[in-house]
Image (cartoon, rainbow, N blue to C red; front, top):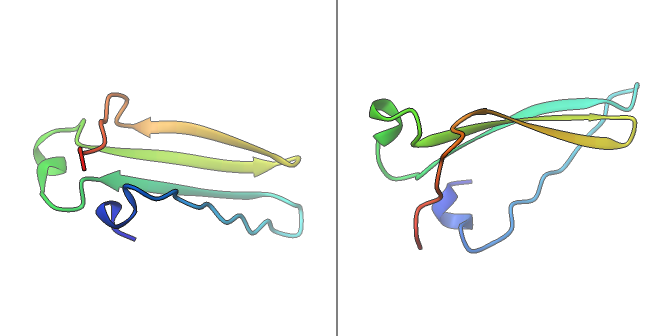
Length: 71
């Protein structure tokens, strides 16, 4: 789903654990309209999700200062 389509709506994360009750994944976010991410490393974010032991851990892998575009 494009960011602009969900900017005013919640982003839902569905987790489907494996047989060991673990799951992992990533979400990439940019402005959804431009190619700024190619010129500026802070124009996008990459977040890692890890689910284990019924706990969800998040790690920001890229884009520490990323700001969502104004609506």
